[in-house]
Length: 209
Image (cartoon, rainbow, N blue to C red):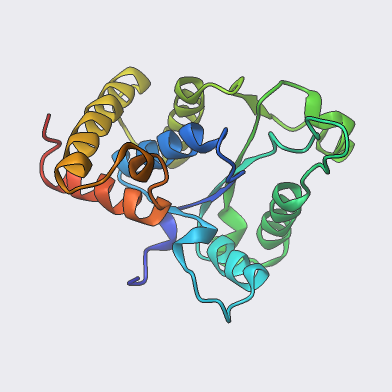
């Protein structure tokens, strides 16, 4: 991947499970629609590169970061809660506090599924402006759009227009995949990197309906 401008990169730190996937895909589309570059840990798949080094570089190279702590609580008996997302939030905070220069101007959005639930696990975040999306991809897009536009100072379309465009993209992509010989199961399990590229192609082609 060519080097991307720091000021246009948005690091996305979120769950990668099946239940969260609709939210992740909608967030990635929103970022691209607003003419920013989403950066996620799955964008590189070098088996010899340690995950923590990859995440460190992505955080270092992104002015903006989105951290979703929705999996900080186990959902069933015997299941471990996930510490990856809070840990990466900590790396981002340290990068902002101690790196200096342009990285001292980094901006972060912290999301959660349920408002205030995170305080039971990470009380140090008390007083921070944590946004709740209630597990709804439309609400997540609104939160991301409003935050990114506010922090970047740019004018942009409203969330409703972005969501309508996302619906158009999904229909276009679904038809294209069927024509290319993909099954329903293939489309549901489509790699995130390839989906991102399809989003870029759709935007570059003038957003066909």
